[in-house]
Image (cartoon, rainbow, N blue to C red):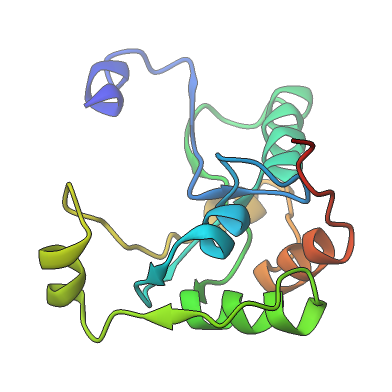
Length: 151
């Protein structure tokens, strides 16, 4: 809806962030959420490293790239099962992860609102010379540099 409103203003940017994460444990971090949920839904999505997202958006301004809509996600996509494997390989969290048997089971038992899973193309962002690290590199780096939440 916000994009529809902003469509009337051609001299601006819309930067699409998708499922934010970084190395800082906390309630808004996708990696933290995966570690804390009792049961997970395996889905494929684009995700965005917060620090890289900020750097990419600032580069848009500095480089004066054409106004428009940019998907500011780490190139590639990842499934929840792959994220869990990387978490376990990193040693950050060693719990036993459980998955819903299907999306319909998830919707019946856990979801309060419908979910959207999507993979966004980063071609437009890279076409203006702005690169983010591949999703696997970004996630593994965040896990390698993991900072637990202070409680």
